[in-house]
Image 1: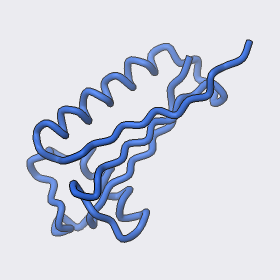
Image 2: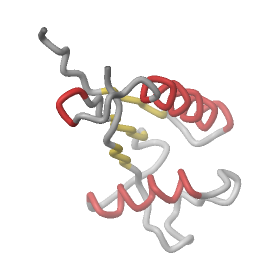
Image 3: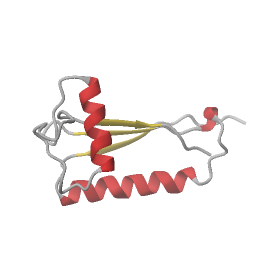
Length: 100
């Protein structure tokens, strides 16, 4: 049986309430999908979360990833986009995981 190899993408246009809500809904859908995952890497659906340049900026991949993880682990009201929170600006979150 052939297994469909897919990558899930979640694009977040801004970090206003609607953008954060879109992120939360996308992550919730991904978690729901992962409930049926058999744990095998060859059936995984990686999730890539990307934020628009208008929402955040990054000068390095590391800065982009750091900001993404910061957003996931912080109250959205406390996250800053100017780098003053010590995490640098930008966001790219890659999570491994789910499939059927």
